[in-house]
Length: 150
Image (cartoon, rainbow, N blue to C red; front, top):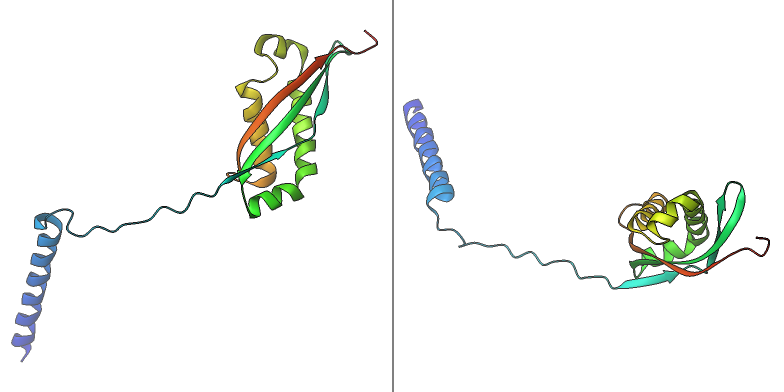
């Protein structure tokens, strides 16, 4: 009886090895494809912040006032609701980033809307909302004015 069980196990292992060899090496490709549907694309919604005035300071004196408008692109639904809840915090962080970036020498060379600035605003938004929630940041300069005291 022991010999019969041993012979059966050997045949079982040989049969399993033969089947595995056929499955991985001899089976024609593409006979069994799994179709995975892509998740549906969630439409974008845009959230505009009110125009904000950022002073440009050179050597302790305000030289210009730059009025900017920031627009965020997010997915509709829960992400948009969360962005609206955190709008004040986001606006404060954007103003802090723009104050740190808007020094006079930096902008005479690169302009007021560059890739560096939008990337910094995107990273500030990602810190608040989490990575991937905000699809895009658009910065629009609405006006540049000299202060009345200069």
